[in-house]
Length: 120
Image (cartoon, rainbow, N blue to C red; front, side, top):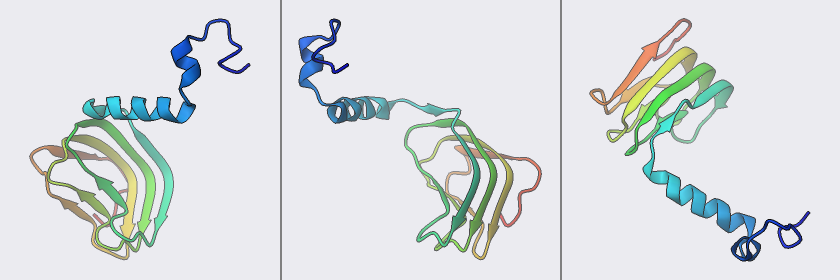
């Protein structure tokens, strides 16, 4: 059923396209912290820059990196920008063929390393 034929649709809802609605939602969420983000079972090959890149200024809490292989990163396997804030749990994260970790926010960003991490 289209928004115009829905009995509960408001006039404002029928005038908006789905893309504009999503764009407003994305903009309004920029000021909030991210929590419980999970990246799992990834293979990152020949990244132009870093394989994994964390950047602020908004906090990220509870990031989970699990079973990720970064092969041949252009600059760094894992790069934490100086404005990053938060923490991550890393299990079985492997960096090969390049430098491992550059944490430019050691006081504001913390890793909890579990089993199987190598190369960083």
